[in-house]
Image 1: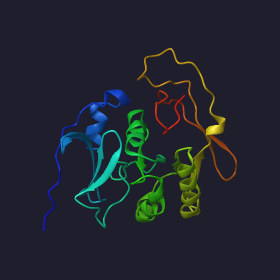
Image 2: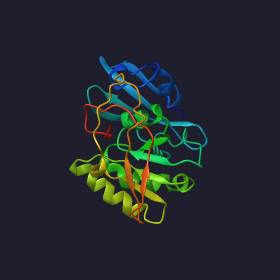
Image 3: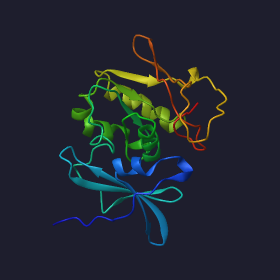
Image 4: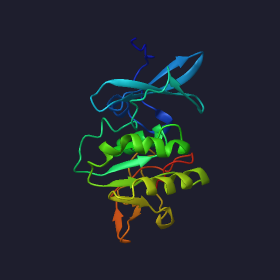
Length: 212
């Protein structure tokens, strides 16, 4: 039987500095569901068919609609089609959108840090095609447990890890939503080399990506 998905609008997420264009690209929508403002993350398989919706009822209640498909891969992977560039793996749809907003293709584990193993294992065939994989998970305890799991699952892949200890805070006189071209994130790999991104964005007010 066919699945009836929820529908919404592609709107700018002003409080997160995420443009309407990025929401369109990732098919991230907002709607009212059961009387509550709700975000809809539409998830596609590698053939471009919509297979799932991940709902975020604000402020932070998550669920699947109507239920998780056995074809679900990591949100953002279908749109990340440039295999000559890295793919960034984050923990959360908003972090994923933030990466795309500043020019980096990204995907996210679904269901938080606890879903890391299943998310990665279902997506390995696709992940193997990218130039490199950059793990950028949260720094709280669940995020660090997820990082250990991800390193194990991806041990035979070209993986780099965001090293937050190397972040250098700096004052940014530019507008809140403007990428800071002077910022850098240090990435460490198995041979201890450092990989730098030339620009990043504003510091968020939540425990997600670390911005300079």
